[in-house]
Image 1 (tube, each protein chain N blue to C red):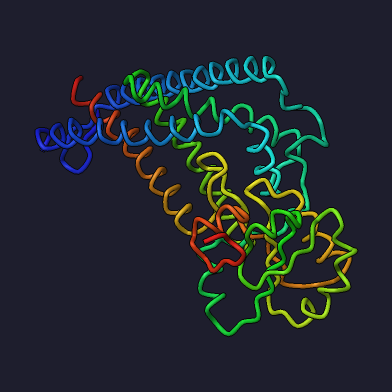
Image 2: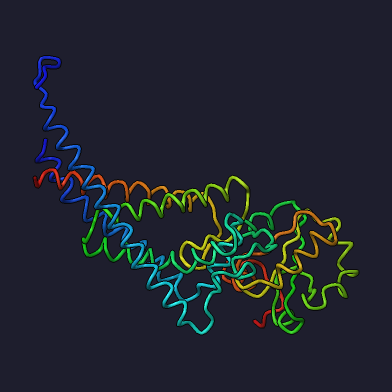
Length: 146
Length: 181
């Protein structure tokens, strides 16, 4: 059983890490050149006060890039997994809220790209699953190493 | 030591494990906070160094709630144009750009002088099932302005701004007029 687990973890963990790191770094880098536009998109979500929205617009892209780099380098994996889980949970909540309110506005997920729809929610949920898998697999790996 | 369900349970061992786990998760939370701190330092420094930094503490900054009209994507518009719904395409770009090329069947009412053109287009707007405002590209603040006037001041319902504007319309290869062959 532990051999099987070891095999699954040794294959799936790097895959999940690379996938989540790739998505986060790409998303962060797409937002960084135009933080103002991203702040406007956050404003269109009508979920946060202007000040909080602006602070989020400034910090979130860097959070994505930093977390992505930690995941890519395999440093502080469980903490980076937790951070990505928090971000994807927030994205899922925001997307779900927009869809529930029927607001058709830009997503801002990868810069100023597309309108929020069910695919956006699916991507966010996939992110939640992948981040949870990273945390779980890192914990399993630790237990196996002990 | 206790006996439960025929198995020996080492309470001290369990407690030790639980303590170790809690300490390990505390460490993770600390690392998580450090990752956030590193990101925040980079974010605030680069924002400060930007030519036009985002005014974080301003209540009227870019993240202030705007009256942005709802968007419609070209993908969603395509079947509607082929269907039986009366779609009114309102091109709010300048007359020069409109003359170069425009969506088939669109009316031109430049955003800056919209009210001057309104009397001409009003009868069509009244009978339209959906009014789609077409601006130049993604940065569509003038489209939002016209949509705002249509919804709030002129009480038109079902107004959408075309997401991506004329650029997206061309890319989606939707019917056009006025283009040089």
